[in-house]
Image (tube, rainbow, N blue to C red; front, top):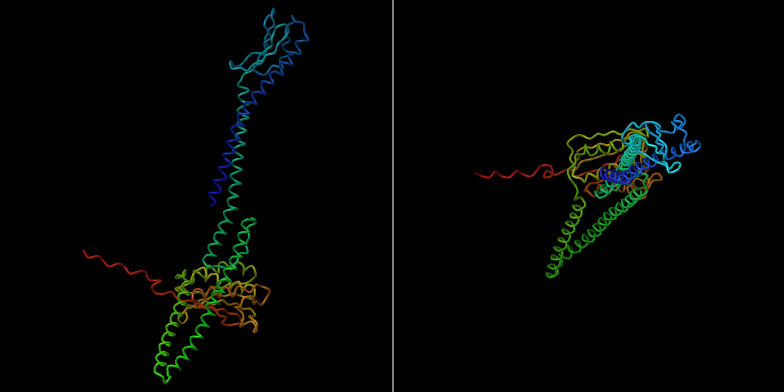
Length: 423
């Protein structure tokens, strides 16, 4: 993108320089010619004024008018009935001449080598060309600066949009000073908030529907169990048939919920927790250091989780951001292998969470201070979208624990090699 902006700007500057530089050089060439001829005519008028003051047959005072004759030039006074008088001598056969009428049918002609004018024309044309080259160079510098100033923010906005599509709903506080791009960033932040709300509402709705349906199915199953012991054989048969359909309905509900979880985790892939969490630590360490705090990373090698990388990075980043704004002391990101899951913990050494807020810490709008209260709710929604779980395992000092599904064997081991074809 930067290269395209630079090339297009340089192309416009080059075309402008050619369109303006060519006619300007030609015009300057002609102006030098006109100015030189005008100067010769002005010298002739001065000489004519001096010669008019003398009697016609008086010889020309060469010393008096020699100063008006250009270097290497010649003045010729041709009056009928008198000898032709010359002042100076031409130094070149290629000359530039101008004449004026003089006396009764006479003329005075002033000539100079044309090389003098050509030298001036070349000098002025070279200056014009240098100015054109300077304008192109200035345009190149401006194009480079503009391309860098535009390409960087555009790439940032494109990366932000890509992360948003990958499930990273974190807001980007940085702005670029370009109103149009800042407006796009504002719209992306608004969209991120709306998508985060949508994800959370979707999960809440699925959970509520699942809970209500399971409760009703359980109650229905109990009633049918009682009805299956009815002394009437036909009633027992109908109860047993209804009980069978209820069990199938429960299985269908489980399959639908599993399909919904699989659809949300469609982008999940094996991710090395050490490399992924190192990126999060590198991103947040400068902010913590500027606040006079430290960040420690304790993640062993070989921990492969089946997650969406953007989601887990966003979730852990939200926990670190929460520790930065509401905690104190050193922030620690650690990971270990747990029972049937991989465990990621984010903790700090602050005062912790008040007891009355512990049950509601993941609710939207709940915050210890005057923040939005969206970070922890969003982190939980992102973790759960990949089939994981986020809990507050210890309120004081605060420790948040993420349980992630481990990568399956078929995710890590490649497909079997094809059998050798017999010869």
